[in-house]
Each structure stands twice: as C-alpha cells, then as structure tokens.
Amino acid sequence: MNRFPAIFNIASNKKAFVAENFVKYRNELQWNIRCSRPPNCESEWAQWSGLMKVLYEVKFRDDEDVWTWKSDENNNFSVAEIRDQIIRQSAEIEDEWRYWNRWVPPKVNLFSWRIAMGRIPVKTELIKRGVQLQNQVCCRCDAYDESVGHLVLSCTMSKSIWWNILAWVKLPVSTQFGSSKELLKQVDSWKGSKVWKKVINLILQTTIWHIWKARNEHEFKGIRVSGSKVVEEIKADSFIWLKSRSKFENINWVRWMDFNVRDIIH
Ligand SMILES: [Zn+2]
Image 1 (cartoon, helix red, strand yellow):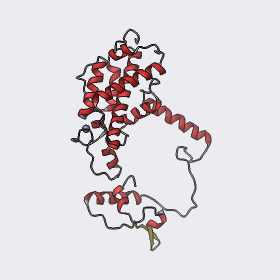
Image 2 (cartoon, rainbow, N blue to C red; image 1 turned 45 degrees about the vertical axis):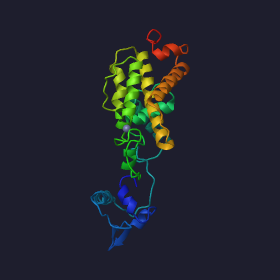
Image 3 (cartoon, rainbow, N blue to C red; image 1 turned 180 degrees about the vertical axis):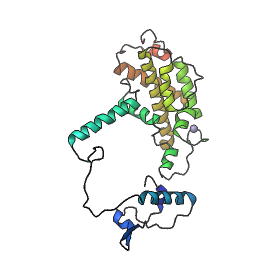
Image 4 (spheres, helix red, strand yellow; image 1 turned 60 degrees about the vertical axis):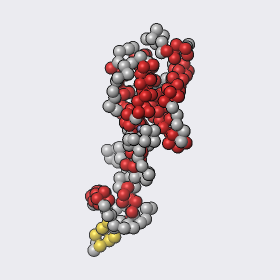
C-alpha cells in the first residue's frame, strides 16, 4: 500500500493474506498477485517490477514461525534491549533536532521538526503516498504545487508574512532560505546572545505554526485568513508563550509589539 500504491490500487483483494498471493507450481512457490486488470501504464509497470524484485528476494522455509527482535544481534527479545533501543533513538533525534525550545509548546516543537524533515501532509506529499486528490495546487495562491517548501517559504502569502515578521524582529528582510530546515538553522549565524537566539527561534517556530494553521483554515473551512491577521496572531502567541514559559514573565506587550526588548533579552 505504501511502497507500491499503484499496484495496491488495482489489486483485487486488498486484505489478502500472504498465502493467498502465491501459488505452488511443481514444488516451487510463485507469486501470484491478483489484480482487477493488468498494469497498463509506465508508472504501474515500474511499480510492478519494483514489487516483484522485492518479493523475489523473500525466501520461504518450512520452519515454524518465530518472533524475533530486530535491534538485538541474536534476535532475542528483552526489556533491557527495548530500553537501550529507546535511549539510542532519542539520542539520534536530539542530535538531529537541536532546536527543541522549551518556551514553545511541545506540539509546536514537534511540528517544526516534522516541517524540517518534510513530513507534513501537504498535497504533493499526500499524492506521493498514493492519496487521491483532485489537484496538488496550493489553495492560498492557486499558482504552484503545494510542497513543504512552497507552503512555508515561497508561497506569496507566506513570503509577506515572513517579511513582516523579519522586519518586526529587526532582521534583514532580504534573507533567502532554501528550505525550512535552513531557515531554522539560520538562527545560529545571526549575531546575538544564546537567549536572544532562543527568542528568535520561538518566533520562527510560531510563524511556521501559524502559516500551517492559516493554510488549514483555508483548505478545510474555506476561510481566507489575511497575512496581517496571521502576523498579529504570531506576535500574540509568541508573547504569551515567552511570558508564560520563560523567565521573562515581566515582558511588556507594548514593547514586544515594537520588539524593543534587547535590553531585557540579552
Ligand atoms: Zn501558494
């Protein structure tokens, strides 16, 4: 279903057991995937041969089925092994994701991480995964395909939001970002203290979050949220999150609106 969606699409029995997908022919097992029709275009044939290549690497044995645990060398299962695996994996994630920011709610952190990995359900990604959509055009500009990069950075709607936000925090508006990951990494190269960078990161994450929220309002409810409204929401949410989640609980709204905070945040 995931790797060969075009074949899954034409398979007659989508819930068939493995055993129902092969036949025994003179002591040999042969794959026999029943389809409602043969593959009839280049992409279907390509997936078909890809599928067959994978399947022919599968070897059958007469042994009894057994459970094995992949991450252990001897395939043995133990609670200690799971614990070690979890520790190993979270170390990998932390390494990959240095931008976890305690001043931002976890759901927003997680979302930024997924954005940087390109793992959010924009239309081009859904289509790649075999979801049937009428089109993959960005609903906000009606001009380009909706990819992660387009949605976050290059859509005219998003661009105007970024210009406003960068100007607000007094950063060069002309800054160009190749990808969302680059955008989040950019903070490291800007001049400023660790704390200031953390505040800027909070604002970048809040911006990405609100661009996605505005996109969903439009896509699912048909509500067109203006760029200036989104900018207001970004300023308000980042203020509330900073005030309630960091040590800067005394931060003042009027000064925040001007981003005149360098003397507090340094
Ligand atoms: Zn667009």
